[in-house]
Amino acid sequence: MALWRVLLAARFIRVLAGARGVGPGVFVMVVSLALVGAALALLPTDVFAIMGGVRLSPQASALQVPALLAAGCVVYTGWLWALAALLVLARREPAWAPPALAPRGRVGPGLYALAGGVVAVFVGVLPVTQPEQRRRTEVERAFAEGRLEEAIAALSRHGPGDYPPHWEPPGWAGADLVDAVDAATRDGVAGWVRARYLARLRAHRFAFAPGWRGDLLTGPALERLAGVLERLPEGRDLARALCADLDHARADAIPGDRPALARLRALAAPPEAPPRDPR
Image (cartoon, rainbow, N blue to C red; front, top):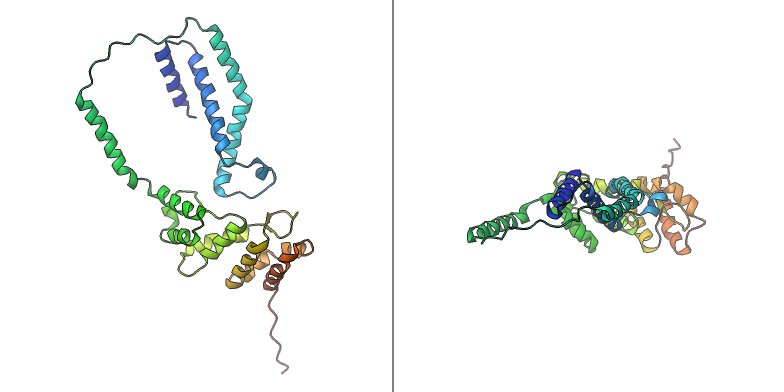
């Protein structure tokens, strides 16, 4: 909500309705706060995840503080602006009314041609503008539709600088992260894509039993994780990073998950030393 937009809208009301004083600005603030509240309701900001200490993606983290500040502004100041608007309505003198308009003259065909030409030019250049955003949309749509191989291939065709700044590809938690790592560690994938997802997997905190802190991973997703780590050269180091959580979750794990947990523990175990030569 930029200040210049508030001032411009207030000036528009003054001219259109013949208003005076701070009344137009008050009404603009009421409408603006209402729109901000509606926009915040559509943002994917999970207050319970924030309070629970769940690790958020960089995009969610970047939205977290501004969204909470904006929500606080709406909650704590909205009723003050609404009360001020009621006072303005009760005490406005003279009554607001639009000024008398002069008879409208005939609009020539040249003006219509100019407006149509401007619209045609901008519509024509629209498909080639903002290539970073179009690449981001392509990847996110493929992830949302379950086409992971196509999404990873699209990422590999470009470098990290070809996407919007501070943007990270999808696949942050649970089975989505496991499947994304599986697709990103296949042959032909760009090195930066592989490194990005392996670092994300290493930093993620899984929970392998109900009630444990972290992102609960059970069932087929846990089996896929074991298979991915067994296939990767880095799998042993990644399994060791999970070893402490695996040991604690052993007793509380779902019975059907214990074979996959055993595979992970075996992978995390230090390799046996070769037998020493008795000579």
